Image 1 (spheres, rainbow, N blue to C red):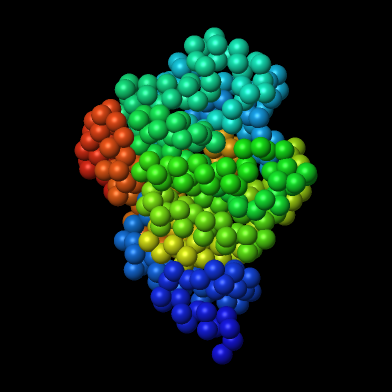
Image 2: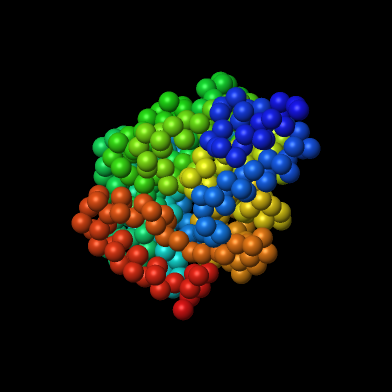
Amino acid sequence: MTRLAADLEILCEPPISRETACRLLRSGDGMLPDLLAAAQSVRAGTKPAVITYSRKVFIPLTNLCRDYCGYCTFRRDPGQPGAHTMTPDEVMAVVRAGERMGCTEALLSLGDKPELIFPEMRETLRHLGYKSTLHYLEAMCEKTLRESSLLPHPNPGLMSDEWLARLARVAPSVGLMLETTSTRLLIKNAAHGDAPDKVPSKRLRVIENAGRRNLPFTTGILIGIGETLDERVDTLIAIRDLHARYGHIQEVIVQNFRAKPGTPMAHWPEPGREDMLRTIAIARLLMPKMNIQAPPNLSDPHYADLLDAGINDWGGISPLTPDFINPEKPWPHLDELQRRTEAKGFELRQRLPVYPEFVAQASTQSKLLTQRLAAAAFGAADLPPFGGIA
């Protein structure tokens, strides 16, 4: 019996070791069917036959950013075509439109601390009446909570412990992609060579501080940006270990790099279908009980195959707004997502941006959240299984 075959024999008792995960991630396509079968078996033992998603609006609060990641087309400098910071009226117009379409999540994404390098952003914030981008984000989260039925889910970049505490009072969950623990990608001309907020130790500190505050948290990995396969496993294990310590990571995203024209990595090779499936399967075997998500629009037209690798969630899907991070990759229509999910033998079900098992945890952060989550949970009970508009 080969070593890889022996590895597959012990997969019935996950979580697997780092050594086994690294070996399986390097295995060839001939081993893939067995690896996927093992991941499916583990998911069947820990998750119901339901695949969830969050119906959302995507709000790009500002696309000004002080980081220059090699793969990003979202960020802008002041004066560049498309550079924009939304006004409160613009934010709430999107929120109310999403409300009418049955959305329950307001995903607020933004560049990292642009006011630190751009005087134009400092002037914009002064005009709006806020000291910093994070102050403005906090205010828009609270406004969304108080004036709509949507729940905010901010992705603000690096945050101090004080800011985690402040956002925890106005958002039931917060997100920060770890992406990778590889410090090699910080060197010049690498993916994070000009991105001071992508230092792995800084991002790990944010995730750990969120755990200390019992704040439901979303994080994940970005594969194919120059990391080795072993580094990919190490990133997944770092996430798993933080959750084992604090129990706060509500979902782990496995996201695949997509090359974009006009970026330094425009001609960088993208992860293939098999690479993506192997990585998701390894994530499931390393973290049997955790919620594992992969974005369907980044694997179109074959996104249904991701179900074979062990995911149990599609992430946020918007019937209204584009994916501003990957605008060239539209979300699947919800009826098509339902059809493909059911064709694989699963029920598609809408969830809130904070997972059901983390609602009680989020409710402890403030009286406002306690009230809003109680109302949202009551409303979610009335949603049809697919989350259509009644």
